[in-house]
Image 1 (spheres, rainbow, N blue to C red):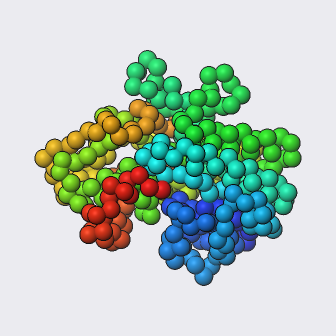
Image 2: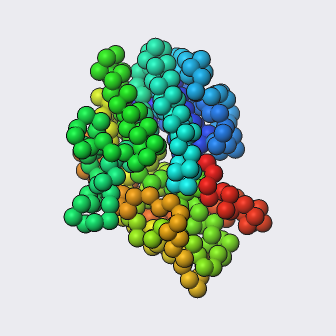
Length: 345
């Protein structure tokens, strides 16, 4: 894979973000000439500290077409991660902001085609899958979601998860349209419940770690706690995205996620155990957003097309993430700001 990226000019949109910064580091290690564009609305320059002297950084808002056109010039590959996003608390309370992702995706795709970009990796999401496949009733639930189950062109396969999910499904469709009309090469990577260092408290895993570090008791879990997720470590996700971009060029979608399923309540208890917090009670707040009941990736296509699957276990990834969080967190500031952080980007 390193040979594929060596000396390639690679643009990472949203590259100062949680996932984008890890991807940028991996691309630099693979020998790529990396440009990062980010408006720093949620991304952080300090996420790029380790590679700041090895990349070109451009601060810009991709909702403006001029920015999209400028940064995609002379690029061989574009990894498009820039979007307006947050945890469940943010996306369910900011639907109008989320809808601006249609503009961002349209601008970056159009500019990439006009500037002759060779390969385009669109960062999609498990939220593109129909919500009626992710319900609690076993007879209706699809335990492992396969790529063909989400499609804007198949009856019953287009019922995405809110504005964010629809934006991602339409982004996939737009990439396929550019492939069909102009021959643009690329892939859509559907990411499943990514976690790891540099993520923030608006997402479940970091929220649980924050609450455990603060010794919250009773320990609050949003929803019933019975929701299933396949929490996937960010290092695995980056590897999957880079492999997909190197090996797939027909703009089809592929899942990037583990097949290890963990209930949300068990994730919280595992984190409490590792941190050393033993709450007297767990409070399940069903007034808060909880998302779909069951969400996990089929890894069949990963194995078939990439010869690969994620290899970081949930416990190993959680330990790495806790170690990072304890080094970075300001306990006093966290105690004062946690409730706000749970709903921010």
